[in-house]
Image 1 (cartoon, helix red, strand yellow):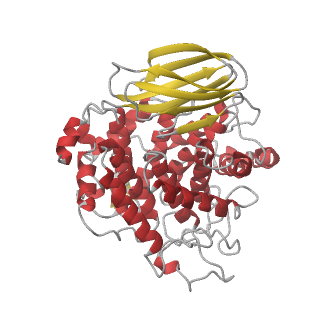
Image 2 (cartoon, helix red, strand yellow):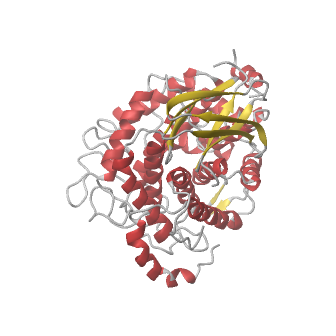
Length: 506
């Protein structure tokens, strides 16, 4: 069936810096020991994200306004597209209508086209906006025109034999999740195959031997940094945000592709290898240096790379891929470093490196120095916060001198641990019933609320469950196709899981 037919078939489916920041530096220092040990409460963490996002939306009230720096660029540029990745993550756990409308207005202002209106671009940077277009379509499956242009763009690549497009590792984050999301939306494995071919070409063939060091488990930004290029201390140069792009991309791809996909193991292996390598080079203060393995080579706090690494660690823990006991301390340090040392009371993010390709670009990065583009740093911060929120305590005493409701996952498979409940929802997408696997430490009442994207309760079930591991089902037959939230409550435990109700049995 041609893609257009499938689309129709699936149609139902200028800164003012706060003076208060200086006065709070002493408080930050006092908090540093606490921050290294505990996450803030859910309420505090949510306030931190909302404050950062509000600063940006207030600064850019028109989502279609061009970005003017050294030249004029459209606002669906890759930098802004990454912000919308974070905004969507925030929306899933805090479904504020203003966030959804802001994202839709952004897409509408560009006619849902790739950057610069280049319908058949092969540049991953220009395709990045498609990630949000697709997620918005999944929330409003009648709006098939929202994904028609990005589908045509990626089909053009799928139908071509070339696989060497991603010669710089940033492109892996920009484009790889677009292929993954389209594969899920269209139920078409050709997107998965092409994505894998392009990824493996970057990993094993670009440069001399590929851009991934199989021994050190980190990525060279592009062929310019392959050996014999070394830092002044004779170490390999691994750019922080460049590796952050890949780490985040792997999480975003693994979050949506089917568990049964053969190539999934390749991405899982690399993700876990990177995680182990990254925690070994985290700074004591929780940040990561711009140059990862050589602290004397442009070593300083840097927020954007730190945010992507924190996001990946949190996602890995939440999905049972990374061991919580091992990785949680690094996650906690990473989030608190950003939230209590980089985030200003008014929501501005400090220590964000400007655009570039290497550790020295834009150096030095300071608390109150704005990057030439602020949007991707915030996007990474919101991605990190949206995953970290799921691990934060319900209450706590850590203050927020800046500031989701409940956490949600878009994963095909989702697992989370609470004080007295381990739970997993499957399958996702669903057809007419959902299985809930659980393990509890005590018996009690389990409440399941099904909400639509407007937050309205459309179904409710209450069951008494007993100590031990078991499962239960709740039924969705007759409910319209679309995105839903399953809010699970058991005693003091509360968790919200996002899932997609399909028209077809998958």
